[in-house]
Image 1 (cartoon, rainbow over the protein chains, first blue to last red):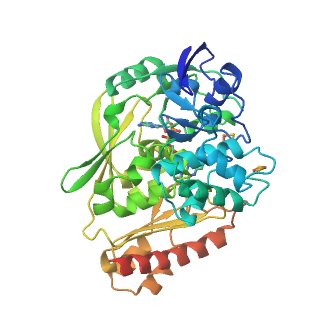
Image 2 (cartoon, chains in turn blue, yellow):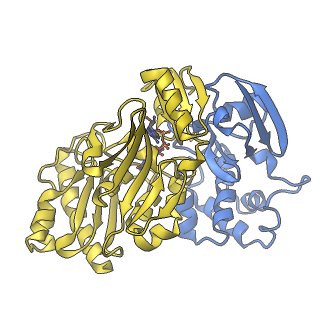
Length: 158
Length: 277
Ligand SMILES: Cc1cc2nc3c(=O)[nH]c(=O)nc-3n(C[C@H](O)[C@H](O)[C@H](O)COP(=O)(O)OP(=O)(O)OC[C@H]3O[C@@H](n4cnc5c(N)ncnc54)[C@H](O)[C@@H]3O)c2cc1C
Ligand code: FES
Ligand code: FES
C-alpha cells in the first residue's frame, strides 16, 4: 500500500507491503538508520521515535498506522547543525558507551520532558522503564536527562 | 522480526469497522494500539489474514463523566486514562492501574479496549475493571449489548466478544469512597507483567478485591470479600486470598509462591485502601 509520512519535516512516500513496520520504513525507505532494532518483543526501546510528538516503539507500529502523520527520529533533532539539548547533555554527562540504545533513549527523554519539563530523578527512571541499556548502568543517562531538563534552552528547541 | 503477511484495511467509524468485519469474517482481526497483537504476530502466535485498523475511529476515544459512572471509549489510550481528570477525582484506582501498564511508549499506543478484549489474565486493567464492577458495551451486526465484567472474561485470552463484534465502551460506576483504593503489582523488572497483582476498591465490609494472574482469567477474591463483609479483620480475610484460585507455575514463580504473594499483596492492598479512605 501507499504510505505517506512526514519524517523530520520532509514528505516521504512509498509503496510498501502492508506488514511493513515503521522502523523498517524509516531505515530502509527513508534511509534514516539512527533508529535501531534491539529485540523481537517490544521490550528494549532502541527503536523509539516520536509519532505526532509522542514516544512510540517503531518496531510495534505499522507504517500504515502512521500514514499521514508526523514522525521525528534522532536525525530530526539537531537544528542547523546545533545539537538538541538532550543530545548535548548525553555528550556532556557521558550518557553512552556503545551507543546502541542511545537514539531510543534520547527520543524517550525528549518525549518525557515534553510531558514533564522538570522531572524528579525517580520520574526520569520511571519514564525510561521501556528502554534497556546494556552498558552504562543508566546512571549517566539519568544525569543527562536531568541536565537537559535544567538547561534553560530546552523549551526553545522543542 | 516482521509479522506474517496480511491485508491492511482502515476503518474510520464504528459502522465501517463492523461492515469490514462482517465482510471478511473470522480471519480478520481488529487492530487497536497493536501493543499486544503486533508482538504476537511477530512471534507467529497469531497470523490473521486481515487487520482492520481502528486507530482512526476517533469517535471511540473519550473519557466522559456520566454522573453515576464514567464512560470510556474502547479506543482510549492508556496514556489518556492515566491523565483523565474525572478519573483522578472519581476513580483513581483505574488511572493508577493504567499507569503500571508496560512503559510510556506502550501507553502512548495501547488502548483500554484492546487490553480488555485481549483479556490476558496477567494484565492490569482486566482485573481492575472487575474490581470496579465495570460494564462492557459491545456492538455487532445484530445491535448493541451490555456485558457485566463478571461475565466478560471467559477463559485464557477469551471474552464474551463474538467474532465480528466490537467493544465500543467501558462504563465504570463511580465508587462510593473513591479514595479507598490500592493497586499492588509484583514483578521483577519495571516493564514486566505482574507475577501476581491485587486491585482493591473500598474499605471495611465493602471492599472489592480482584486478583491478577491467579487463574486463566482475572478473578474476584470472593472468600476475602465474604469474610470482610462478615466482619473479619484485614489480616484474617487476606489469609483466604488464594481460595478458589488456579495459579500456574512458570519460569517466574511456582503456584505455591503465587498463592503466598496473593495473601501478602491482598493484605497490603486492603491496608493501603483503608489508610487512604
Ligand atoms: C513489552 C510490553 C509490556 C506490556 N506490559 C503490560 C503490563 O505490564 N500490563 C498490562 O496490562 N499490559 C501490558 N502490555 C500489553 C498492553 O497493555 C497492550 O496495550 C494491551 O494489552 C492491548 O491494547 P492494544 O490497544 O494495543 O490492542 P491490540 O494489540 O491492537 O489488540 C489486542 C486484541 O484485542 C482485539 N481488540 C482490540 N480492540 C478491540 C475492540 N475495540 N473490540 C474488539 N476487539 C478488539 C484485537 O483484535 C486483538 O485481538 C504490555 C505490552 C508489551 C508489548
Ligand atoms: S526493537 Fe526493541 S522495543 Fe523496538
Ligand atoms: S550504551 Fe550500550 S546499550 Fe546503552
